[in-house]
Length: 105
Image 1 (cartoon, rainbow, N blue to C red):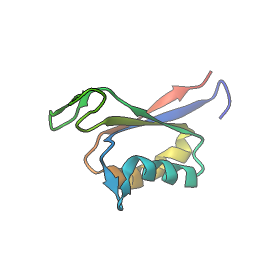
Image 2 (spheres, rainbow, N blue to C red; image 1 turned 30 degrees about the vertical axis):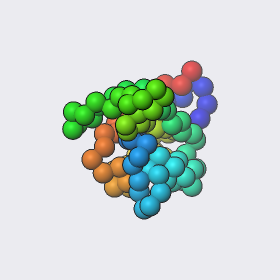
Image 3 (spheres, rainbow, N blue to C red; image 1 turned 90 degrees about the vertical axis):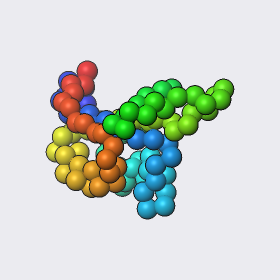
Image 4 (cartoon, one colour; image 1 turned 135 degrees about the vertical axis):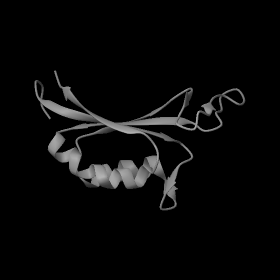
């Protein structure tokens, strides 16, 4: 993508302990996106968070979390990302994800 171009951003909220097909879900998703030649993705680890089950993911001991919340952020052209959404939905199960328009500058 180039500057002054519109695209979309996909945000996927998961936990570090999540798996898909016997592999860490975050690694599985990154490899899936790389194979589809998506422009780029960033995986962020959060300090705290909660999801639909209303369980607060927080530090247990110094430097550790019970379930580390993570956010996968993907930015590319909508026509490349939107067709992948059904597969991504299957991979992430009941976790939250959203897609929104972005303008690169």
